[in-house]
Length: 502
Ligand SMILES: *Cc1c(COP(=O)(O)O)cnc(C)c1O
Image: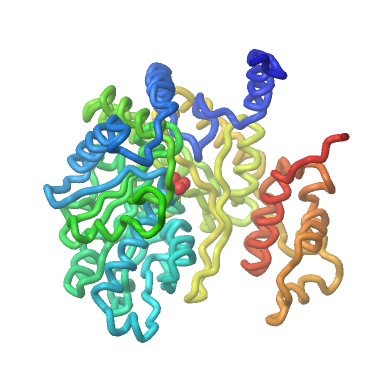
């Protein structure tokens, strides 16, 4: 067939689009991407993806390479997470899917174990520190569990007792993190898992971010060596250095794990047996993960973890050496959050969001995290998040200098005044939005509000601002349902088809 456009031209257009992306390599983006810094590892992954491009991961009995690769990836992960013969698992499409499936498994096992209260309509509870990843909120929403989120202290740490005292018959799953994403706190896993085991409650360790790096660092125990831990999630597409689309979910006990599966023969097509959410699926990220594990092995991962550990220590020292800023709490692993040091006079303080915006002008992208009021009324401050990867070591001097310079440039600038941001709203609009009987925002109203804040434009793709601090102030100030609706509108409009002339 003669294509309507030449492949070379098509790829040139794609290259142009890619050039506008945030840089995925070189250590300039300190979230989202996990760069081993090894170009030959990326090449290997690309070749592996190409080799399985036409395969359907839906059926490992037809495409036997899928079963073999998955079995071998899981064997490596099980050893790494110190699981015994009773630990089995699945490769999933990412951390969110691993978390969703851990919750789905726990809910279904809870129903089986509590047939009477379940029949009476008791809604099972998902218990976790408020710092547990948002994927668990999504899981509770999708699978109909009640969320019970426990407040953390100013260091982002959750007391074991605070979780243990809320345990009860209706708890289907308690979630702890190794470490948490927002503040890199290692939750009190040993104590929580022991209490959960005593009461017959499942305990999931979310090691999505730590799973492929903490095994090569000295930490308190958090994996399957801890009694009472019933499942662990660990993302291959983070510190496993695989391309996006791969994570593992390991579960202790075959019988427990079988509740993860969905199987039906009750239709007129092929029998469906799915361990994960998708049906037909790519084997690409699995093949890439498998190849990367063969290449790196234990020693390769250990070497990369050591690089992360060195860079993290150096950057934490940098931040703690900057007047007006400090590292939050006692972070574990290659990530940490930065907050204002309130022990210095106001005119010497550095707002973490102005700082992040300023660092961006020096060529590095940090992640802004909003201030947040917990259910006990205490407030977690706005922070800026850094995830460190092996490639960070290459740019360490330049990055440290950027962190210092940027702080000097915004020191004393007060945080964005929420009142100023809200002034963009027409009079009475905020009160109307906050009213308990306020109707849900429709798309047109939401878009108009966004435009008032200078976000998005009519018709064309939404323009995103250079400075994120005002947006984050807005997120911290508006009622959550309103912000969630506005952000939904922003993202939905971003991909609305643009009409072309007939
Ligand atoms: C990244 C992450 C997740 C979610 O993973 P995705 O791969 O983004 O879906 C869950 N938990 C933690 C702690 C994470 O860091």
